[in-house]
Structure formats: C-alpha cells, structure tokens
Length: 168
Image (cartoon, rainbow, N blue to C red; front, side, top):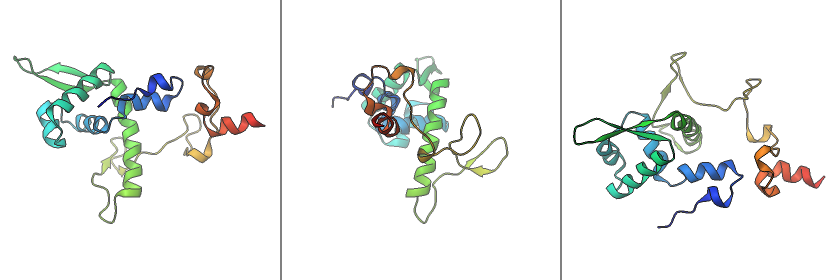
C-alpha cells in the first residue's frame, strides 16, 4: 500500500509533518511499546500481533525519522530500539492522546493503564499547559496566528482563527 506523504503536500503544516512520522496506525503503538520497555523486535511483535514485515518497515521508518535508535545487544547482531529525545517528546503527544482516550472511550471499566508521576508520586494524567503562564490550554482558549514558516502556506493551513481574522 502506498503511503501518503503529508509533509510534502502540506509542507507548512506541523500537524501534517507530524502525521507523516506517526500517522500510520502501527507507529504510535510501536512507540508506546518501546516507551514502556519492550525494546526488542520479538517483544514488540508478540505484543502487537503485527506481521514481521510491517514491524520491520515501521521500525526502519521510525529510525530513519530520528524517533528511535537501534542499539546492538547480541553478537549476531541483534538490536534493541530506544527512544531518542525526538521520540521521547513524541511520546508526550501520545500521552495526551491517551488522556483523551481514557476520558472518552474507556467505558465503565475505566482506563486500561494508570500513570504515576515521578515528581509527586501520584496517579495522574497529562494536560496541556501554557508555557508562559502555566494555565490550562484548550483549543477554544487560543488563537492560531501565522508563524514565520507560514509565508508560503495557504490561509486555511494557519487554522480557523487566522482564516476568520483575515476576512475582517
């Protein structure tokens, strides 16, 4: 199956560029497994039930994108996969997705996994906060304004607030 390369089609859109890295459905699950400590091919394959061919492709692409790195662990050689800094920051995004899924899709049984915050020791979840004031940040609390990389982008790529503002 041919992959759509969103980063080329919508070069000035950060959402499209991110989807180019993790938009294929197996990629976030592979990253999740590596994050929780399943670093070897066979562990990931067994956990996900993914074909060896697809997993090989996903791991290779994530390494190529700089999200994972391969480290040899055996004489053969065999490799373990580890998150890079870029990958660890991408897991932050997955944690926000997890919070949404836990809130809206977990059902009566509740979330399948709980997360204990190292700093305070409490079970918690991730929330978006403003980097300047620390207040909670939600889609209806912000305006999307064109940034320095938006010069060549169509107005719609900047978001609804920018499009509405340009009509005034």
